Image (cartoon, rainbow, N blue to C red; front, side, top):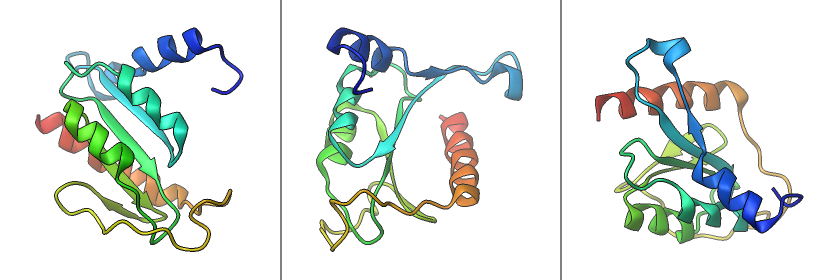
Length: 130
């Protein structure tokens, strides 16, 4: 997103919607999902549609590290927030303590592709129940 103008970034965040009718049937409501590593880019969640009960932020952290910046902001706006440590997923009220281990501010955040895909399916199932 750093190559987009500020206006383009806001417009993109505002329409971060994933339609799932092709995969899950024609009556499935759209979900608004923003995914990203912990960092300033997640500030764009401020422009997500808070009227959509399926709005979700998925934030990837360095394992063992956690900052509540975007978790708190998401929750305050009524947006569901999930934190991910490689292959572990957490959400409120069961969030870890704030921690900044060595590597937290680095550029290498491990992420298990298979567990992320499984998590996406679990989150999707939970959103479907809403």
